[in-house]
Image 1 (cartoon, rainbow, N blue to C red):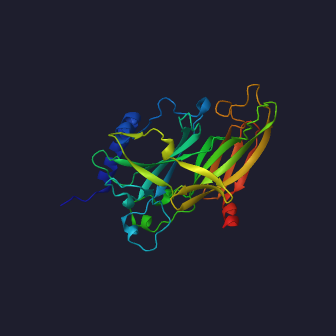
Image 2 (cartoon, rainbow, N blue to C red):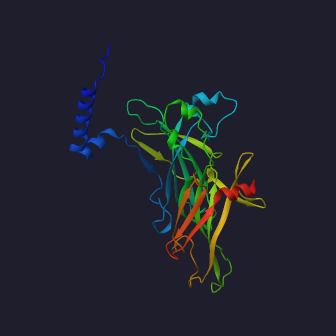
Image 3 (cartoon, rainbow, N blue to C red):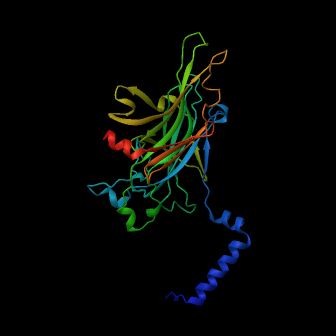
Length: 315
């Protein structure tokens, strides 16, 4: 029979834990925190031109085993995947999402690529408490687009990330990945004295309907495979807008142009892949308030947008 916990014994235990923690906080925390390293296989080409690289982290609530049998699925993260690899992906309740941009590394594509990594984190995975798999999906951008910043948009579900019954009934709000890009209107005319235009745009990319590949984790690391251009989703411009085709499904990318300017190319032509960004802006998104902001360090301006209003107008 377990002994009842008294107030003096609880205070004594708490006092000892506080002494252990604050005596050597770095050592104690390093011993208690499980670390999972994310490694990239990019053959030395692990960043965009001039070392530009953006990444963002987000948390999502999964469907969970109790929600799978429900005929009315709640709004939550239920990733589509090609093969499960023997893992019970549908039963995951909590996910950590990581998005990062880099150069594709392909001399033929010569484009930025955004890779989305979904890591399950809501269960006890063996003695190491680390997941044994992760999901990966890649999106190849057009050649004239350079990623300057990334941010996730939406309800991250932090208030419901528990194993209790509240997760079952939790519904997330709208979810997307915000991509801030700079685009150069490429002029194939040999006369480099002509003006070229640069534009800064905000793309809202819904990622829930992307198809993810299942990858296996190492002991304490997550090895991201090298980008294979032919396996990436590609953005296609049509009369209906910019789309990503996933089988018979078309994922619509909402695009907003923030500003434009004219450029005088260099004598040898403007090289989109090596020249500096025009605005060097940063992106901030708030899903709970439905707004987004772009801060330009060059012009010193701040642009704010009502993103929910944009979706209401399109629906």
